Image 1 (cartoon, rainbow, N blue to C red):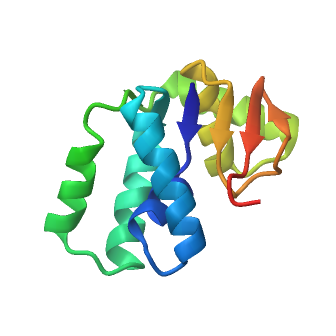
Image 2 (cartoon, rainbow, N blue to C red; image 1 turned 135 degrees about the vertical axis):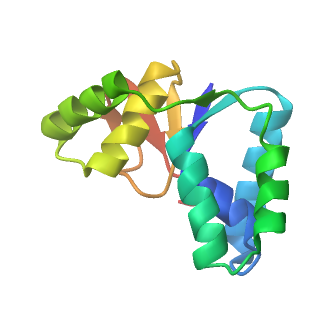
Image 3 (cartoon, rainbow, N blue to C red; image 1 turned 180 degrees about the horizontal axis):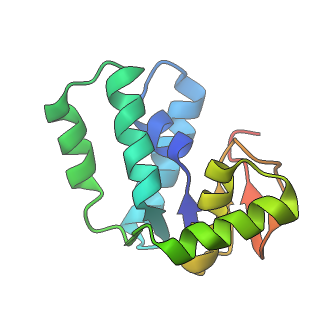
Length: 134
């Protein structure tokens, strides 16, 4: 199982960087199609925000994107998850937002976290980071 970070979803819907768009699209389609990925409410919130504010997509388009992800297991936020993120932040010196992503990946039992935001190959709380764009 893999955990998809926000940037993977964003590149999958943003065709401006053709190489990253192609890689992300294949990853997302493959992982979703095989039922091999997880998301979190944080990822979906950040994705929706980037789509609207930075990419200029309207609400209708963003809602279609979200509808396409409705069957992907998505972890809700909780006080326990935030507490774990605070622990992970202290252990590894990550930002709290990145620590929340790692905590969610850990909680969902994902072996890998696909992201370009953390160190490729690094293991945080038992979750290995993989940057698919490297």
